[in-house]
Length: 122
Image (cartoon, rainbow, N blue to C red; front, top):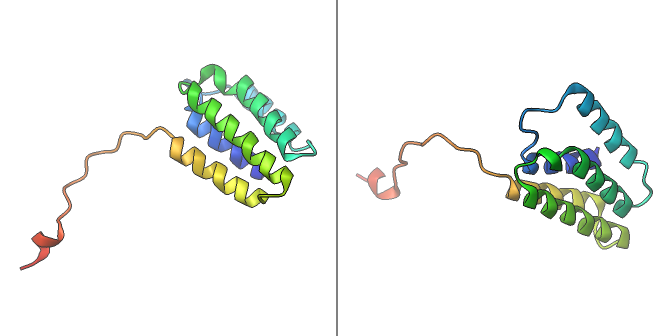
């Protein structure tokens, strides 16, 4: 589950697929991600997930540099987990934060101006 969360963060930052993946491609990607969970070390799982990302996400990503950055972050965090200097939960949190920080912002509708404190005083 944690591995899938990390992979999902990468998909979000990658800009997902431009036209959407086919059901067959989605199923194949899920099988590949599940195979990564069988790896014995966090680094091996991270490298496996990076390979899945390279095969299924990178070819259609509009944000190649962000994919590269998240893949590197995934390996760095996995190395810390394997070294015992970070828990898997801490790594999951940092990976999710990295994904959120790098996610391209979507256009938001303009909001009405908010009153400031001085305009509220009478």
